[in-house]
Length: 161
Image (tube, rainbow, N blue to C red; front, side):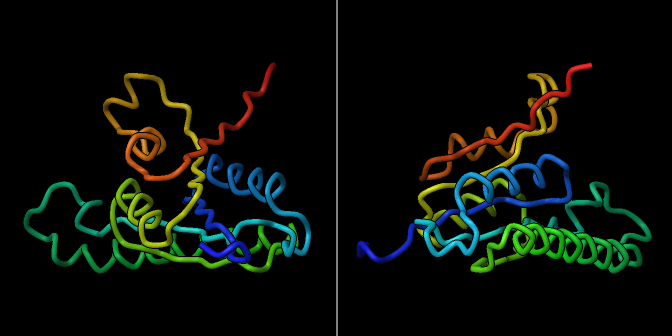
């Protein structure tokens, strides 16, 4: 890698508060206004589930529902991307590449790391306990073990009452 070439940082984004917090935290800590001083090229990656993965059970009527589910997933992806772009613009970070890739978030993010030769992958944490993590799976846990780069898991601070 040439010394003038910026390292790649990938931030996984979705429609959760945790993801929004992780993006804002990353922009605040790694990108100065007008981002020309940042050593990183920023890629935002959203994993759009396939309609068939959302409909766990296939049966009569599934074919009629698939286009509706797909349209909803596309709307969500557009909303996530627009919100992320607005966040970047509000932090005066304009050199951003955004991608929506269909598939499971774990695989999409690890594949993006490989494709772009990323140095850092940033993901938010939902803060699941051991049981929920075992049942639902954890994107951050999977990426921490399988991505071939540094993985930063950004946890949102707990609000004390």
